[in-house]
Image (cartoon, rainbow, N blue to C red; front, top):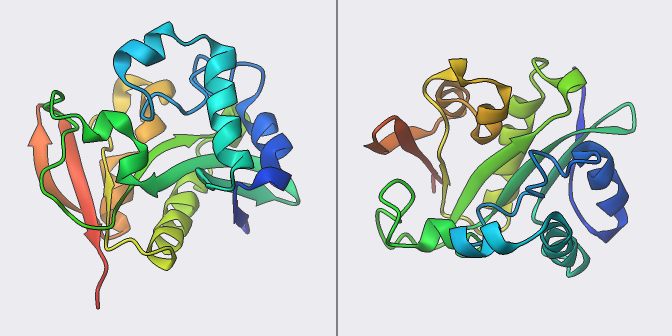
Length: 188
């Protein structure tokens, strides 16, 4: 399947709204769960989350990528520098805390595809594009926190699957319970 994949910029905001639908992706998260602390995320209403993501887009921070098939937006992948994601910078979280002081470390941490576009390899193509995008924008390494057990349901797969990351060349560098940290390092 041939897809076009583009960074989300201000002129693509409406396309992102189309992909996320009326519920803002997963339960009105607006892909801000990683950006905000648990407390702030819990206190924010869906409009606050949407506004935060819109601000990132309008400020040209390109918080992710959109996949298009035949000109229609069909999927989303969040990708960016680790520093953007407050939950990943916290030393309180055993699962997500940084394992090292990697310089120029980026993260691929969320995929969202409307139901009718799932199971077609779109997320895999988005991951490949996110790798290319991150390295082109200065990443020295890219991390992901995929699921090992894919039987948890489609909504749990927003982080991707371990096999998808392995096929892209990521290797496991740590595991907390059933959550691996996978990393891809740029070859120089």
